[in-house]
Length: 409
Image 1 (tube, rainbow, N blue to C red):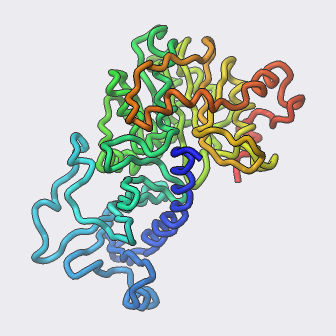
Image 2 (image 1 turned 180 degrees about the horizontal axis):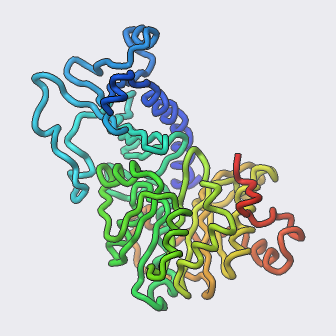
Image 3 (image 1 turned 45 degrees about the vertical axis):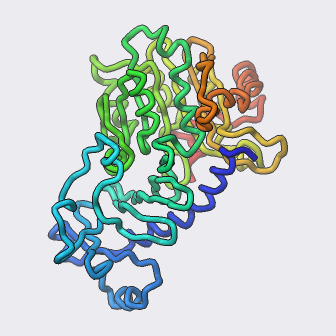
């Protein structure tokens, strides 16, 4: 088992605990007075303090975290603020996200459980909960949303991503048609920001990146805790709504690459994987542009487990003439269920090839993914059969549509 696989297994083992912690932290309801004021205080109720349990039974939701700290929420943002003599001017400073200190704001933490330090908890206007944590035992920082890990990096090594998935997403810049054959000044679009780790890579390469994410909270937390500094336009909007509005305009960008990585509540967002939605994406691409799409699902297992991945591949082949897909770790040679991030590259013209740099720092284990991931290719034969014979002849699901979407729970 390689390092990337180990990281996925460890992370999946922890995410259930973190998800429960996030739900507990967001569970407290504000009083009527607090609701009217737009503010509330919530207790970080981890079930360990008898006083917490007693207060909860009495319906009390306003309480202090410690002798000198309150957990205060305003406009959906919750954080720990010192009270009394402990209050300092440093707590009133706002993070700009423009330097290393911006990734670690000078504010008190919300709480801690074992080696996990909770830096921020927030619920956005769509009802989605988010939590930023530092895990000192694994030396990483993560952005969580319910049952999902939206992204993260190693605290001990600067800002490399914790999953090989993100290194594979980066390689879209090495597809020759994306930059060298672009018919306009290259510009990228990212649908689903996460922590913004991949946008930072493309920014260093001088490529402006526009971002669309449904949650204002994700954008805010990426700036405050993960060093995301936009170099393009940023839209807090549902991606399908944004694409409809953008395509209705006569003057909009065409993108050399569109990165599609939307993940919430343990699954990829079904509405953004339909034929209709992917055709909108295709229309936004330049003639030689490339879509790179991440979807989470089983690459080996039962027919029911394989449904998600196969439905997405079937849909991509329906929309795009060129499709290649890769796992984020070496595929298993057995039929044991294997859950993976599957990264698919799709183009409407040029075959998908990669000009990977020849010299890569041997100490950069994450960068080694660039030289290895093409050995993890999936479904190459199936893609050809789908194109030649169609879904029914291959046993694959029919392409996903808005009217018939098997990816919904």
